[in-house]
Image (cartoon, rainbow over all chains, first blue to last red; front, side):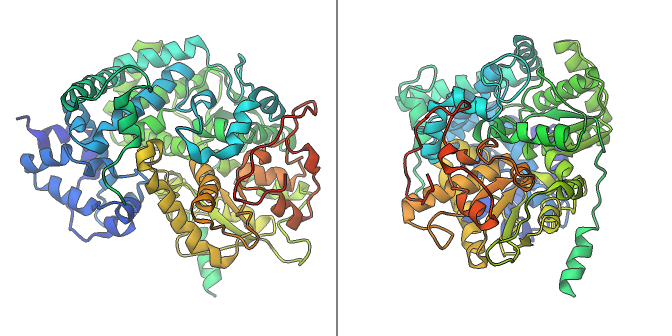
Length: 233
Length: 356
């Protein structure tokens, strides 16, 4: 087995976020995730500071590390300058690196994130783009969104946007030159490799679970990880 | 006495905000969900305050949402940020202003990381050069767009045609301000007023005639949670946290909520619609909900802009009750028209009341 604690210490966010935790629980008291999930950032920090690789592996394969909302309210409050949110970032990166993310229901959702906001970046230059957001996937957008999408061209013109046009402005076409820059940055800095790992381990898991896996959003595996949850809260 | 003490604490964190010549970086969320907001900001800067601000067609996302969702490595985000700084340098600017609070947190974190780990800055410079042939200077001043509106709040006030006053009663409007977590919770000294008493929006309320509402969950997160909202199966996290805030503020009878974060603005608007549909609850007395505006939308109203040209009709919670309280002129028939007055139909009715 890999030396997991050692691997964590190679992540600058772990180095910045992990000092000696005194188990006071302040982070848990103010954590929005702890108020919603059975989630306890104090326990996460305490687990990793014990340097027990078996426990860390259990964490990496669990739903727990995916329940944080990364609001980083914990950073403001910890009296010992620990940052549970940073530790979570390092745990998530390692879980993805090793393919452990596919072992938990919430971890498996990484594929949906990669195929939506991740691919939007390389396609549109931004994490979100109006044409990719519909009220089936995002029903809370409400009727005003359906109306806006239906009338996008005349409405966005009235609102001063430069929708689908070249040049500067809101919702413009991002130039090929900029998109190429992003692609090269993704290739050279590890994002493309991470994307590939998410796809690879997700495919393996889909085969194990016997759920149809395909490209895009219209397949059983994507729909299952995007829509389903077993923890009814 | 307590109020004076709190005001003093608010002023404890001062922040340098450049006076002019800004490089502007857009927000992924704002462009889509409130598509008039950024053009309005630029318009106020250029045409009302006569400032120089550059809107670069080559800019992109900072990747912040992807970063906080754990799908891109930190090196990727740092290199994309470095590219944005390179674009600023190429354009001849030194003051960087970003329109997104997540981005503000990202840019600040990258600069702080490089300050404490200079070897990482060297590494990212190399990666940027290798991938794009670009080089960059560190910005002299890094601020959020709400910082700029805060800086010029008195100038806007001097030109204002309206105040945050209930025209009928003559009393100040009750206003909730919500600050995005990544504005000051990560690096408190980088936000006006710090994390505990941020003043960047409260200062607008004070200056423009409104009354701040202090309520127990004032500093609680809106509930975005990145992957907690972006995945439908997790979305209960998001609405539950926003509802916690609404439940906490409702007894103070807010007339308006203002936010400085793209996501917060969206969630506080849209979750009111969803809570109304699911539970039949609205957080005002008349079943409309509490209008939610950005800081520049509010500035636009102060300056007398046509509400339908600055995108106030694309909020799910109707803003008309707020306009009526302010005695603000508007043409209702014009609300859902196109640029040349063409009929575009109307959004379907919801369980929230609407003047449409």
